[in-house]
Image (cartoon, rainbow, N blue to C red; front, side, top):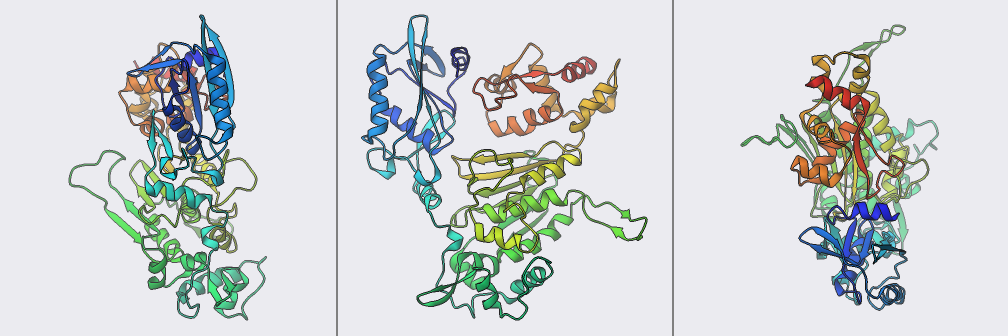
Length: 506
């Protein structure tokens, strides 16, 4: 971070990525709560020498910078305050005679969370908005589950393998397995021997026992409930747009998937086909009809992501797939296990590797359960706005949103084709939310906080999904720092297409 970037960032209030402390003569106790919160969430920047007065940041400077910096860094390394050593990156700036100390706190590895204070795990914190919140017991338990070296779906359960399985689910799976040309045939094996060869049954001192993965995949209802008391997923269809919520109107169709994962997979498609975009195509050579939904890949991979990556030990929250007239939201408990860019090629760490491998063996989940690139490719190829993907490190959840806003993706091209005027059809394709965002940017580039303030929005996901991302996807708005999309000083500006659209909309 340069000095100019820091000064620009201090023009905005604190948020999930920034915390400021006076720390003129020493490190305050609440600074350690912030370190814990940043380390347990997505990381952040801690600035000493800045006072926060009701949301307004004022530079006051650190009076004893050497003492404060040395005390802070040495304490981070000795473990006197925190249970883990935190490797921070420090910077020092002098502005107008004032010294500011800047510390960049990284997110801790999954295996080292939670980071807590004074040897008391109850003093674990997470970052929400501009505040440091003490973790609840359930949040601490999620951290501990994620930190375990052995994956939950690999553990065995003391069930009788002759009694605990739904044989119809296994039969369906084996039929798909045998149809795959690269699989070694197992037709001569019993169901239990077959599952043993796949690693889904395991040898233990008490005999052959099923793994959690095999019960989740194939378990009979009673045995499944004993291990997993909540639904695998809850699919809901609504007859209105997202956030409209007409009074007295709920879902018009609902499928609660309370049996095993295979049955959930089989019941997902009848629900999906009720609203899927199904074309009528005839192959000119074979004259065979092709009714494959155009958006099948996006929906299939999004649902596979729910099945492979949800936290099956979280019994208080269930995955929800909600289909509205303008979008479909796939939400599941458990943030992304993999770190870094989830769309980059290469292997990714998986929360439930045995479940992901089981799907891969029947031709699904080819990317080990991370088919997000396929979701994006299929959805954008159809002309839709790029899907919104959010891994919430604080709330421990993951969400994929398929926005059904096909026209926005081609607005930019249509604007380019019109010189003197933009047709009424083109201008109508821009949503009211995007139009309001464009109006805010007429005077020049603005950052997220200023845009939300002008739009009178408090819910950040609403701003991202309904305003910013559609405008970016339509190339009506661009980042001022495209090479650093997550920069704390990132701003957004109108493109030539955006200015032309506003001009022609008057």
